[in-house]
Length: 274
Image 1 (cartoon, rainbow, N blue to C red):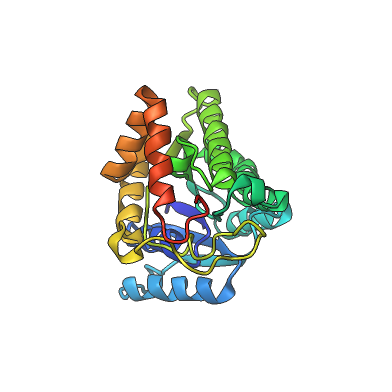
Image 2: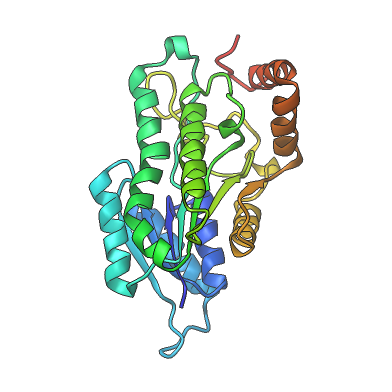
């Protein structure tokens, strides 16, 4: 039996990752702030595993918690260890975004993003690491192209994803000889709630997406690609042609990347860049 823990599992990519893990036969521990959302994810997993029996049960537990709170992350890992006694995969998926010019943005917005996107990854990884090392398991960070290229009007989001990626890269280097696998997955623009729940300059949810969500990569496609990368023990996963081009252009032509990125963000509906 293989055990996977997934944060931010109440919707979007997190829910899709949980469903795909169930399809692959993992026992799954899920964490999110929304009890209702977690229950919907559990029901979706149950619907997939209609063949579950007493001898082949669907093994899934949930923890209501906030990854920005260290004690919640410890409780999440402790719940899984008490239930299964092991962890094979940890997927740090929980995250929030923001949209606002830095000059106008309250510092508390950046602090909230760092607390969730960066410190949430650090907390969960810290407490799961002993079991992951013992099982030569996988640590996964669901990052973003914003972790390779700083995005205007997303200062807090880019900073938190750069920090996450730096942490995970360091962790990978430290463990080159231990058998620990570390994957940084960057989906690119994906259909999800993250833009609707993104914070504006004052720290309020913007409650609308500047993008046409139904035109973006599906959460299910991201989950399938991510699990495939985990199974193959890849180090990076960069999805969508736009994402691959953004990383490549930024590496070789950084000034051009700045201009192209600025123009894209400026053309968003109700863009903070005027």
